[in-house]
Length: 484
Image (cartoon, rainbow, N blue to C red; front, side, top):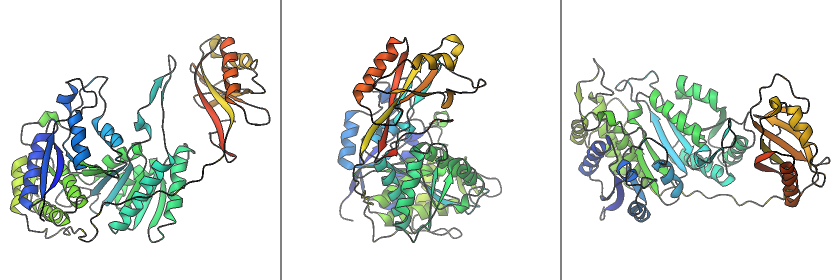
């Protein structure tokens, strides 16, 4: 290679500087053609009063290099500090989180020696939008946001990843038996995209049983694609069943920028003790080398790392009496890998990466025709804590409101219908969803909604939120209440 590739590097907090030093030493010894722009992120930046944990110069560095190798950071306790990872992922459009989870048995202890799966997680949406409100004395709300382009993009990425790396099956995981619109859309989009990849097997699992199967029979999975929160949880489960979260690396990939890191935290309790295992960050760096078109170096590093594991040179977190030959610290482990560069594992299958297709995947979305959108009703959320919280009292009073035929249809509490004809046993909080519609389901206007809200206020109620009820090409765009 004639020129070096400039990347942004952050040493991070806790064990971060130690494992970054070890990782970069291995990459340099392997001949990686890299130039570093070192930035400061994390705890020190937070404590300067920068709530994102990242200074403007760091942002400019990422804009320039478009590749970020990052050690773990520490977020100070207390409110007001944003997750740097979430901020980076969303600000730079790093929509795909890729976490390979592979067993290295018997050299790393695991009950599931055949595990070799990849979790591809949507990285920008879902509950991680962080939009929360306290609406009443008793009730808090977090908004779960799922978009059509966000869903399509991550699902297509998963299929393209499977195609590029010779994977045979893609499994979708959702909770669409409960969240029929949000998770239901993700599942529907998965089924649509899957038709374009007939050579790849597909299936779907509800997330709860899917997680249980990862914990019990991870070898049945190949590539898993899922939503943000689910993916965060199951990727740690999958990493742990392979033997150690400390071995896991991940990629956060966008259309322009990509971030590579270990999946574990900053472990401040062992910082500075030369005890940390650098394998997670190193595996993230191996993914980075493939991403930037240096697959030969990635192969050399990955195979030397596996040979080190085979030879029983282990840090304390994976050390096993009777199997490990030597317990080593962070830097000695790195030196052991350097000493084995050019060697391959004898018992585990050596790693190979394609030398032909080194371009990052370019995901193109399908064009959509806009649906006809009509407003057909409104859910008005009310903070009410009077008359023993009797649903019949609030219901009878709200029936007095009538805005051009827009009248009370039903009331729910925590999603369960309580008026009319609710069950007296249902426990009610001070947070009431009151659904207003016209008798014949005909469209309404925003002026009707404003008139309705004025009437609700005049009736003495505190409305705290509204959600409009729309149809799209005549298809209902909102969930029915339990009991509706």
